[in-house]
Image (cartoon, rainbow, N blue to C red):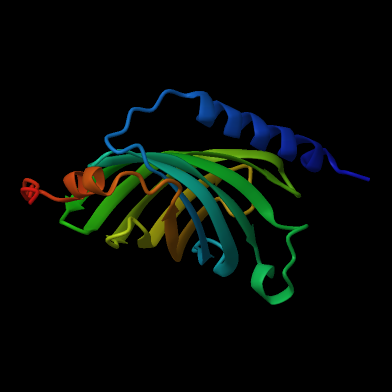
Amino acid sequence: MPTSSDMIRKPLLMVLFALLCSLPMYAGINDWYVHVAPGYFVNPLQRHTLGSVKFGLEKQLSRSTCAGFDIYARSNNLFTQADFRSAEYSIAGYWKPNVLMSKNQDLYLALGGNLGTSSSAGITFGLNLGIEYDVTLSNGTKFFIAQDNLLVFRSPDRLICGLSAGVKIPRGLGDVYKRQLFYSSAPPVLYPQE
């Protein structure tokens, strides 16, 4: 028999996903990135670790900003017993301005809020703040390391700090010429046709 948090979790995720898809986002290159990252969270107040899996979508709004959301699953025994039933789930929306930019390496500051469910507390909510370091390959794929700080109210793990690493895969690779304009600070070189 489904619990009250199970009955809330699925409709909540569907509504938030539909809301994100319906918002108008204007992007320079208009790339969507899909990413998955395993990681660990540490609760400094209770001194224990939580295994975490993060799945998300991110949209490159311009060369210097991104926006998106992540869905987190966190539990004490997530990696040892693959126990997703007792995990605490949350969805975190964020806006990421670029703090440090180079040709293929970026450092972002991630700001946003989170909403989720816990088997012990029901609905949870809070704030998230983090940094993310990305390395972009020539085909648009990104490798990243993210440090996330979540403040989750109504949860036994109120303040948690995490570290995760993963890969962001672009949904549409787009035109190669436009991508070179977007990621290069130098003007494009056009070769005359023979």
